[in-house]
Image (cartoon, rainbow, N blue to C red; front, top):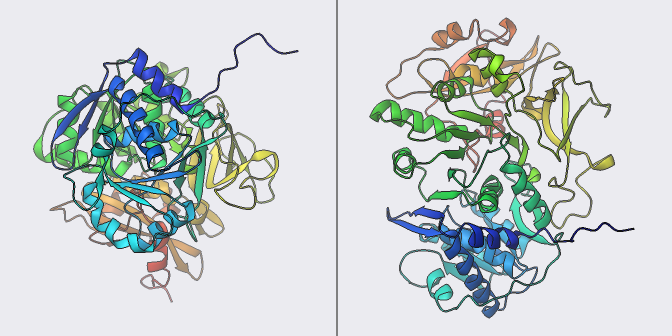
Length: 533
C-alpha cells in the first residue's frame, strides 16, 4: 500500500525556482575584485541560471558532465551553480589556493569539460592549462574580454526560455575535493537530495537560523565545501546574500555595516584578522547577530568577545565528506539558567547534531563508548548527507552499518553534545596520556600578544612526546615564552604545559585557512628540547 502524498523530487533546481518565485526582489550583492559593487536579486538569478544552462548546451555539455570553477564568491558564480544543475551537470568547485600539481590532478581526475575562472586567477589558468586533458572551454567570469570567452557574452546571448533537464533526486549535482589529506585529494560527489535536505536543515534555529529577513555574508569561499551549503540554504528561505571577492578585513567590515549583515560564516583566522582591524581602526559590529565559525576549533577568547557583544556564535563542526554540517553550537534547554562562563563552555564544544545526523565514539577495537563526557575515542558519523563512497573509488568509504570514520578524536556528553579533543594524528601522547593540541592552542591564543599558536608533539626519552608551542606574535608585541606559560598556569592541566615556546613570523596554513599541522610535524620532527638528551 502506498501513501496518499505527492511524490515530488528533492532537486537543487527546485530551490532556485522557489527563491525566484517567492523571493523575487530579495537582493544578491557582489563586491568584486576590482572594488566595484553590483546588485541583483533571486528573480534575476533564476533567469540567469536558465541562460547559463542554454549556454552550456550550446557548448555541447550534457547530463553528468563536470563543469569546473576557480572563483571567489560572487553572483555569476552563484548562477553557474544552479545553471549547471539545470542541465543535469555536476558543478565542480576548485580551490585556487592549492598547489599546481593538485589543481592539475583534480581537474584531470574529475574529467572537467568546462572551466570558469575569475580574471585574478588567469596566471593559474595559464600555468595548468597545458596539463589539462579534458577541458574544452575556458571561460572568464569577470573583466574585459581578452583571450578567453566571457561569462557575460555567453549568458547574454541566451533568452532564458529553458526547461530544466529531467533528473532523479539521487543524481549527482556537485563535486568537491578534500584538502589536507595524505596522498592525492579525494572527490566527494553530492546529490540533489543530499544538498536539499542539508539546506532545509541549515535554516533551522539551532543550526544557522536563516530566514527571509536574514542578511548573510558567507566569508567561507564557495569552493570550500559548497560554502557550507549557504547558497542553497539562502535560496530555501530567500535570505539576502552579500558576496565578497575580497576577504580583507576593512572590506568585510564595510559590507557588514553598510549592507546591514545579520549573519556571517567563516573560519577562525578570518575573525582574528577582523578583530585586529577593529582594534586598530575602531568601528562596531553593525547589525550582526549570528556568526557561524567552523573549519577548525574556535578559541575561547574569540567566542567570549563575540558573545559579550550579543552575537550568537554557532561553533560548527563538519567535513567536505559531511556536506559539511555535522554539528553546531545549539543552545541547550537550560541556556538562560547558565552563567556567562557556563554558556561559553557550551559554545566552546562542537555542539549537537541536527536531525538526520548520528554520531558515535568507538575505541580502537570498534566498540561503541558511552556518552559520559569522558570516554574519548574515534568519532564516527552517518546520515543522509554523509559520504558513502569517494568519487571514482572502487570501495565504499564507510564501515559496517554506514559509519564513516571522521579521523577526529572526541567525547559525547550525556545530552548529545559532541566535543572534539583532537585529530587522531594530532594528539600529543605523553606518558601514555593524551594532550589535546587543540585545547592547548586555543588557550594560548587567549594570551596577550599572541596572534596564532600551534602545538605539536616532539620526542622525549621519558615521556615519549612533549608539547612544543609555536607562536606568532601580534604586531608590536614582545610577549615572551615565560609570559605565555604564566598565562597558561590556570588555563590547562599542569602536565599539559609546553616544555618550550618558540616564535615564528608565520604558521603554514591549508588552502582553506586551517593551520597545516602535518607540515609543522614534519618541520619539527627532529626538534631537540633544551636540556633533554
